[in-house]
Image 1 (cartoon, rainbow, N blue to C red):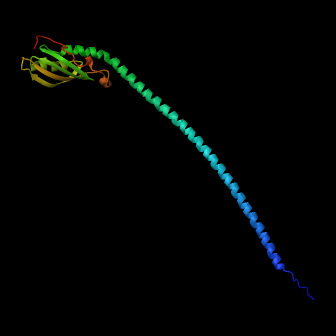
Image 2 (cartoon, helix red, strand yellow; image 1 turned 90 degrees about the vertical axis):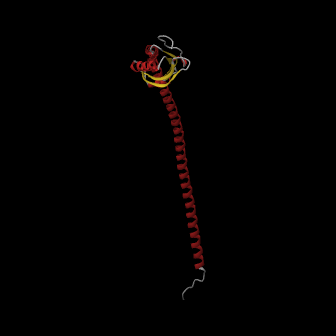
Length: 204
């Protein structure tokens, strides 16, 4: 006679499978949490290392920026020093020109002409004076044009005086400079007006 098992074996097998599944699920969850934690630690360590490298690079960049600013400042100081040396050198070379200029002015003023003012701005000269006639002024301009230290005479104004036989005039000229054009910003010779630089012949 066959033996029949009346125990609820299927229910027991089902509970056992659920238990195994729960254990496997718990182990997978723990493994996933552990892997996630390890990955988080790795990424946090990598991020921290990269941040430290970035901070180090920022510090080095700031040091280099300060060094570049110092180099630029030194370069600017060097350029200013060189410019001053060049100006001083050109002024030293231009010192004899003042003597030649005054001598030339005295030599170019013809008889019957005397100057009331001589003004200099760089290489530009402005003569103001009185002449017995316009012919004397023309002679003065020719003398300037043929001189060694003056050139480009240009007559601005010539005006006959009503109370005398003379004429007032304003005449421009250029100084021939051998020291370079950078000396043009030097102060005016004689501090501006210079009365009666030269006088030849009788009074106008």
